[in-house]
Image 1 (tube, helix red, strand yellow):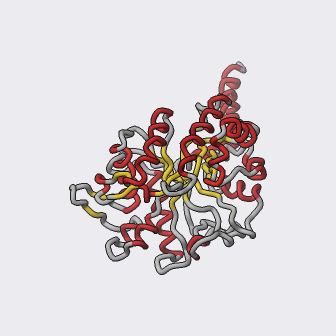
Image 2: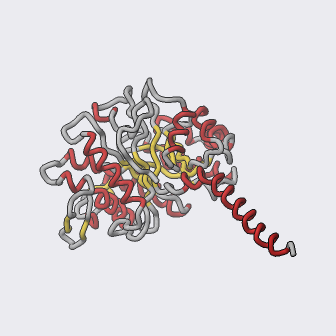
Image 3: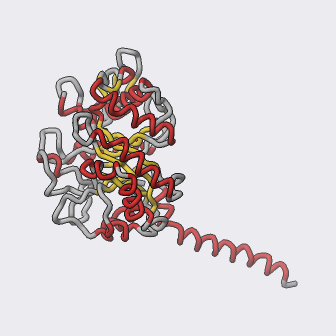
Length: 349
C-alpha cells in the first residue's frame, strides 16, 4: 500500500535536486550565455576599481570574455575560478626579448602555466597594432613562434591559440570590401604571420573601429551606416552591406583570401565608440553603437562574406581611462565609469 506514495515522492525529490542544481549553475550559465561578446580591460587610469571588483562587474553583467594588455597578477588572482575566458596581450616593446626561445618559455611559465587551469586562458595576442614600419616588426614572427612553441611544450595548445592583433590599416583598397588586400608595405611583413596562423588553426585578431573610419571620411560615410541604423548600401559589385562594421571586416577577409589564407578566422579584438572628445563622440552615439554591435555580433547574421554565425568580438573598453595617451577621445571609450556605474544601458547577455 505504501508503494504508490513512494512512487509519487521520488519525482518530487528528483525535481528538487534539479532545481537546486539549476540555481547553483545560474552564475556559470549567465556568463557562458554571453560568450560571443567580450570586453577589453585597460588599466590606464588612476581611479579604477580593484581587480576583484572589476571581475565582479564582468560576472554581474554576464560578460564572459576579457582582454587585458599585459600580464597582471591581481587580475589573474581575481579571475581564478570565474570561468571568464582571457586574452592576454604582449605589447610590442616586449617582442625583441621574446625572440629568445628561453625567454618565451619563461614568459609562458610565469604568466600562463602558473595560473592555469584556474584562469581560463584563450588567446595570447603577441603584439598589438604592430605596423610594418615599426622597428619591432622584425621581431613579431619569431616572438609568435617562440610563444607558440612554449604553449605546445606546456601541452596547452588545445586550449590556447597564439596570434597577433592588427588594425585595419594594413589592408588598402578596402572599398568595395571584395577588393581588400594587404598593402605592398604590409604584405612581406604580415604574410608569414598569416601562414603561421593558418598552419596552427589560430585566428587573426583585428581591431575594427567604424568610429575611426567615419571620422576620417565624414563626407563620404553616413554616420547612420557606422551606427548600424541605416538601410545599408549596395557596393559597386552588387553586395548589400547593412553597416560599416561588416564592410570593414569583410575587407579583412578579402585580404586573407588574396594571401591564400581563406580559412583563417578573424576575431574582432577591439571595437568601440567614444562618448566625448569629438563631434561624433556623444553618449547617444556610443549607446547606439555598442548595443547595436552587441546585438549584431551575438546573432547569426554574420557578414556577407561569412554569413550565418556569431562574430567573436571584444568591446573597447570596460572603463574610461583618464591617464591614457593620445587625443581626448582615447580617454572616453569606457562602458563604465571608474565608480562602476554604467555609462549606457546595455544588455550583454
